[in-house]
Image (tube, rainbow, N blue to C red; front, side):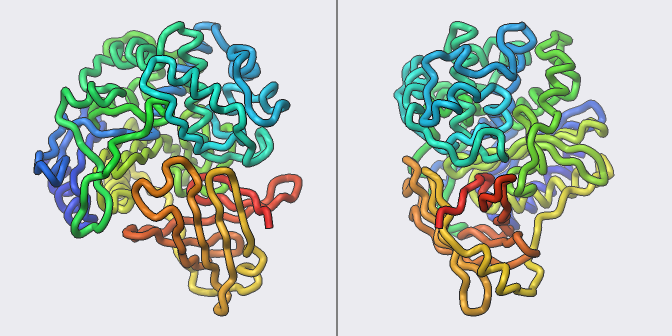
Length: 453
């Protein structure tokens, strides 16, 4: 299997212009790891199976696990208001402050503005300060009304974890998961990553990629996206969930009830493709297909992409960590081949343009959709197609690219359109929908954004 995997990875890195990658596959009770390319185009350091990459938002599954450990220990409840444990917690809507729960945060249904990336320093108090900075955080949708990807919610949940445990989130992670799982190269801090063979992100022209001018998010984003690891060690974490909460050595880290709760659907995702799931659990993206269940998570940082998929009935785990290039397309190709061969599993297909344009649907969707972090202006062109002017208004806007982009959208069916982002060839969906109260929204990039004009 190793030789075949190596050939597949090498071929796809070349085909999809991925600078460097590490792939680990668990099947038939064994893990096989391969790597390809380089970690840094400036130093030409080779990617190896012990190379450390940023796993980005796959971190959320780790934070979700730490939160469910609190539930197992009887220290918190999923359905008690967060303010019960964090009396200092404030957001713009006082009613939401009094009602939002850990379940809302872990399932991305709080409605809180999700891309609040406040850099509150490098100290152990950074998450406390981050929660203080959320006092003016607005709603993108009513509490529990839909699913909208929320990094902010995980930083808040991370502070809850550290406050209840009485030590910084990084230490809770180390003592609660990293050490019991026997992981030697999984960490969160850049100075720790420097001890290993570390990848850096790549951006820009695919034919002439350059290293990212920024290494990673601020420490306050730790519970949402700062875990760094090898592909093999991410597989070990995933296996603990496959094994109903037991570490490789047999120690129980999570009860079977909490493992099941994390994999149980809490919310439907209007866009079932971008984030790797048609529903969301407590830390996992979930898919129910004709072939069986899949769960996992994707991650994206500054020029690095990470992917994790678990087919529980077949006991197959796939982890791909990458730097630069058309990583999403590469993962789709690899995962489809591996899941079909190892589990008889068909990956859910991404939507593609249907060819026919309905001018009436385009006209109905045109308008301005806006949240505190983004402004999406859809206009209907002469041909009946849609154009989008997208402006990123987060604190990270413009670091890697122009904060304003203009995109053409093509129809798939009424309410579902697709576009391609610059330098990427896969189709990205925009799903137009309404809440129960009739308020029109668009789900784009995993975020639910209301129409305001």
